[in-house]
Length: 125
Image (cartoon, rainbow, N blue to C red):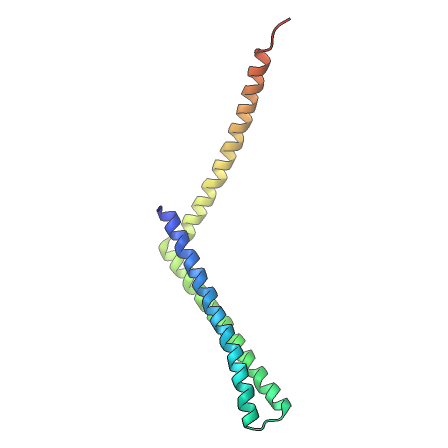
């Protein structure tokens, strides 16, 4: 397996871990909201107090989720930079653009040569 493929696999694994972490946080916030509702019922809070309490917990959870996501993304970016993946991807993209341009030029040249060959091989009257 080439180094480029291995590095792309590492980046894909990082992204999957981030997605898993965010999914767990979302699941946890739902469980926290349910637990808060049950706690509010036990404490005999009014419906309005319960609503405000749950809303505050959910907002805090969302804020912490966003902070966690940003933190993980920054960590992943630093790790990718240390591994040289970012630079490698940019180099590979530039090489791909150059190769595509070269293929287009070669296609045009082949078409031109084929048309010349076809014109010269026609029977003369």
